[in-house]
Image 1 (tube, rainbow, N blue to C red):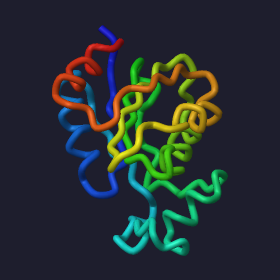
Image 2 (image 1 turned 90 degrees about the vertical axis):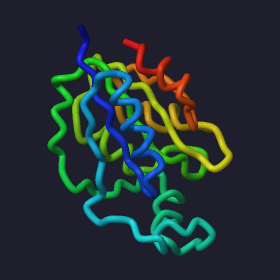
Image 3 (image 1 turned 120 degrees about the vertical axis):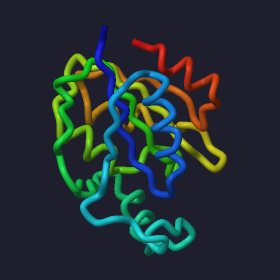
Amino acid sequence: MKKKLVAYFSASGKTARLANDLAKAAGADLYEICPAVPYTSADLNWQNKQSRSSIEMSDHSSRPALADTNADIAAYDTIYIGFPVWWYIAPTIINTFLESYDFSGKKIILFATSGGSGFGKAVQNLQPSAPNAEIIEGKVNPSAKDIEALSAIN
């Protein structure tokens, strides 16, 4: 049996709830991707062009620091990565996470939360950060049925 990990970044708690549901359904371990400097509500104000998230997302080379790099990625075959969709892609902290480990030969399945958009160019923007991994676009705002389907992917 392949070992699974659900890694997620959650700014508001919505992605965390889905990650917990997916980990239970998949029989997977859970790992929270935490920024070294937590985001405040002001940081997340997408309507303010000077907010931290707006500045990071306008610079695709931005790599927010992680609070830790303790995930044992080598121990897993399948890694689900969850995040809120920001500006039609994954937040750049997901690139930081991918670039902090060796995902060679791993299957990465994305899931996300969004207020109205799909994945956009998330896979295209993440693939260079994990060039030797297979990245699969999963579901945005997955329902309970979607979570069951995602959990069955090996």
